[in-house]
Length: 277
Ligand SMILES: NC(=O)c1ccc[n+]([C@@H]2O[C@H](COP(=O)([O-])OP(=O)(O)OC[C@H]3O[C@@H](n4cnc5c(N)ncnc54)[C@H](OP(=O)(O)O)[C@@H]3O)[C@@H](O)[C@H]2O)c1
Image 1 (cartoon, rainbow, N blue to C red):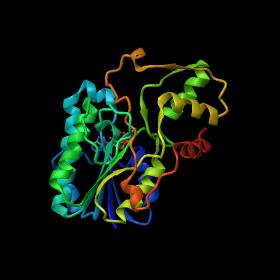
Image 2 (spheres, protein in one colour):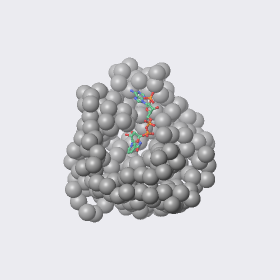
Image 3 (cartoon, protein in one colour):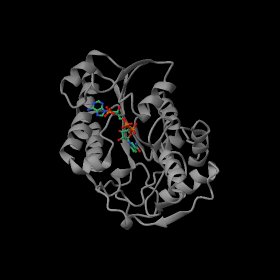
Image 4 (tube, rainbow, N blue to C red):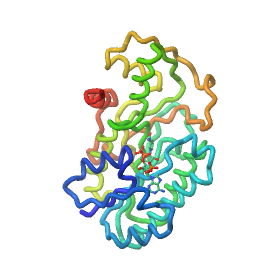
């Protein structure tokens, strides 16, 4: 298949590029390809993709809170441009969304069809992205993920290791709960999904969930830093521009029905840490 990956230089885009090697890939990203420009629609149509995997987004949640209009331009209108290109070219679309479309005011992990209620500007802009995809297209997959980490990025595990080594002690919140998602595992699941043509909603995070505190403890344990003291705090301790949902783990039911499963986040973390230096 001819597959366009938008946001190909990002965490997930890079992982997708590595797993989709048997396909003809069309790698797209800034500055040459900007989803906010209406011309991107024509540009994408002219490339005649069979599938478009749209990972590009304004992903810094605090920047989205400071500039919600820009967040909507990139994450909502930009997604609309991509969806229109898929409409006009007949391509299937995979839109990558987030656990943050849920408000976190529950004590059960969210299934694929749970009611959405975004509580911050990033989440709202991604919610509108989901809406345009669902309304404009018939051949769509929406894949929600959370707490992405991968080898090259400045992500949570990397920050915890650096802070532990620099400060010798940490403070981490217990009241933000989600699913760590190792980008290569998520990319592999997306590869399997697009082979099914079974359109719809999917949750592709690593299995299991934890608080940020639990995640930090496991990172330290697996890297031989279990002696580093970690103080459990709540989010009241920090003033944050963007407020994340407190309890927003996702559960994968639909993927499992198609025999697409992701291993536990602890196993994925182990793999990630093997290559960490
Ligand atoms: N990271 C997470 O923890 C997380 C959690 C849940 C859901 N998600 C979703 O998962 C997807 C992938 O996340 P990620 O962490 O891989 O993102 P990322 O590393 O931030 O990569 C996003 C890529 O999109 C590009 N981009 C930004 N604006 C663009 C535009 N106007 N036109 C074209 N490309 C543009 C970025 O370029 P620049 O770097 O030059 O800006 C970057 O290469 C996103 O849709 C995100 O909302 C992420």
